[in-house]
Length: 218
Ligand code: AMP
Image (cartoon, rainbow, N blue to C red; front, side, top):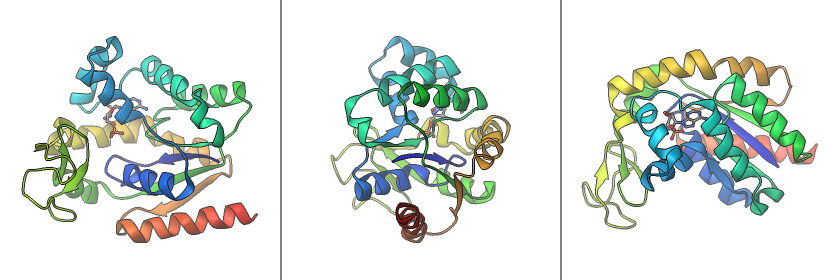
């Protein structure tokens, strides 16, 4: 099964992607994570991507398309995969269709996580990420056991540069301009399903599971 998760930054699609990956035993491909890893190891892609990421802007299509293509060609993706944060522009969506065609595959579902900008700003400005392992916490909704420290590895918890309220606004503008057209693009395929992303994580996840269960029963 190939799933694409679509939605604004802070819609919780990354969290849902992890939950679905676990439940359905599918690889979770987060373009944001792949890019952050490139930045961490200071690769050529990482060096070019960093300034766009810190500013909350989209990394140039040729870099994200190359990363996505490499990742979906790996053997673990033969069973299917969950695409989180890609495609994020019509050019990426067309490149993704082409990639899948070459692999003789197609998208099964596009899950669209719908939420308002106000809700997103409140969610993301409280988000803290572990500097070392990337685990994600929220000051109000899922705080770490010890303030400022990661439960999993003890690493320092930081506010991602792109979770700063000013940058969040930019990310939302970028989403409106570049990614929102994909709602139309995928809406026309009849494969898109809307999820209320303002619901708590477990409720939204239950809705996702129901949709996937109905789909498999078809
Ligand atoms: P995320 O973790 O998905 O919120 O992504 C963090 C940042 O990585 C985004 O704000 C962009 O700068 C960059 N990024 C992630 N996915 C893409 C993509 N598909 N196209 C362009 N830039 C991306």
